Length: 333
Ligand code: SAM
Image (cartoon, rainbow, N blue to C red):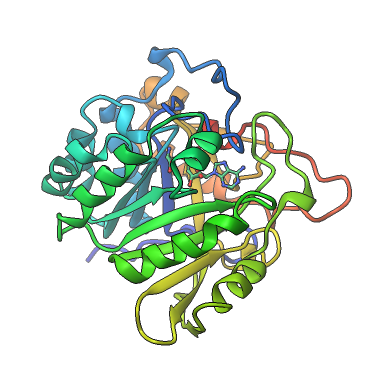
């Protein structure tokens, strides 16, 4: 008989089941709340974990109970042959949930190949349905291509649910809320509003720019009453359905309603550093042991040691808050 797997637990008693895997730090958008107009200094290619290395780490993670894998970046769809990686990870024993977060601009031609490869869930980021305001926030005139990507995903029944994620910024997003909420009513998308976090490369974030989930709910409810529906224990979002049954919205409110106490997530950067919180100041190097011939048991040991040190909570709302050691696109959001 094989011994039961020892759960991957942190020093505060939380079990870790979810891993965000960044496959690249590059992005083809320049969203104002994330990256500067000129981009960032990209990782040199040899620094990126190869598909073989990513597969190996996911095998080790899945063997100790990390069954939920989300691919992200940067923009994951700019990494060449991404469906090949999806196919490899989908076949890993213990991977129960494989999803991907994208800006959607390359999705029209990749939705089918990704679903064929075994992807089952998709998050598409979209902050505005107005061409002008979309271009203003992303610095790219690409709304039509993102909408074509969403339509391609919608035509692919294996990709469900499709979540549309919108970063809410005071002074910008209030006007976008009705059209985005209408999208959730008219199409099979769960539209989720995410509070702006201090992870922008320009370091312009201020607490006064956070448009809270509660404020957005109030805007929606002027038109359409909402009813809360239960969310899973480690869900980052509070879920609401339209009272007339027309669809669902989600509110991810890390600033005004932190959910750190139920956090079951860790993150792997594109260069193979493990981060135990978005706001971590320390990282755990998995690239070096991988390339120095470490055994699976040795890799597991590094992972367990990192997780044992997982931060209790982010401290965005505390005096003296210190920013994370990398920005959102470099970490993998
Ligand atoms: N490129 C992909 C995308 O657009 O979804 C994946 C990476 S992107 C960094 C992941 C998510 O992080 C996006 O939904 C993006 O809007 C969000 N994001 C970026 N910077 C943020 C910030 N400062 N606060 C909150 N969310 C942010």
